[in-house]
Image (cartoon, rainbow, N blue to C red; front, side, top):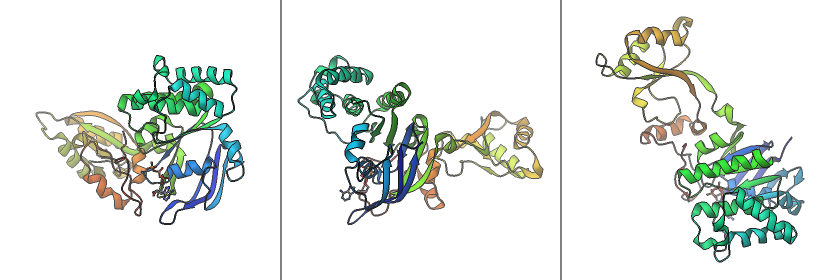
Length: 349
Ligand SMILES: Nc1ncnc2c1ncn2[C@@H]1O[C@H](COP(=O)(O)OP(=O)(O)OP(=O)(O)O)[C@@H](O)[C@H]1O
């Protein structure tokens, strides 16, 4: 089953190609749409809502053609826009009731649904105060509530964690997950923060410069690789145990690196070694490491997992990652013709 289907979808502005022959097939569940600022995420959402025409290609939402069924799509789809768009002088209750009425709910149902939805997103007594005095987190919750109030089958959430601190972000991600688990509503959520989609989404679609980079279930991005991670602690005998182990394993013929190929440098990178599984002579690399570290201080050995950030690493961008300060994530390369990003560098927290 498909909730969103695009085929060779393009959107060209006079100076910029925002979407370039994008073909995606999105199933029910929570799907992350990830890309740098300017990658084309908001443009795709506007086309899917029937609010902006595509230059070429086709798109269907819940089986309906966006060019001919925009109004019917918007009846069954909720939309949380990216930017601050709330009226400051009315309360959350007044605003969400208004949006429910706009969606066609009768007055009593609109009030009941509003109360339920605001409770669900975690707004209680504050819901009677003017929105102008709300924190960013509360405003994001009001935007989420108005997207849900008419009980849609699918919601588009455009950068719902923008402007939130880590705790607010975690709360919002939990809410988004529950939108699907509690109500069965499918979610398309955009973000330039790779790590948060890794934890929240069943499926991730990665776009860059309007083209599809990858579309897979989240587990495939983060599946175990064939390399081992060995974490080394220094001992009195080997004050630099990592170098000693590196030398010993290399001498035994193993392929050993200090940073995972393509991954963001870890904060403890100085103590991590990555061993490729093609150990010499068909030896199991676990055995090789075990034997080699018999006299050294091995602390932890586990299969290394891919990170979503690695999708963006090509040989050309590897330098950028290597130059990033330890503990920071690599930036998603911005498409060349685009103006400066609006929201800062993406990260992989
Ligand atoms: N109405 C428009 N006219 C001209 N160019 C536009 C228009 N809307 C978007 N663009 C351009 O299309 C590209 C994609 O923009 P879009 O807003 O879809 O990106 P995005 O991935 O949603 O990023 P952001 O999170 O910054 O909004 C950008 O280069 C943007 O400048």
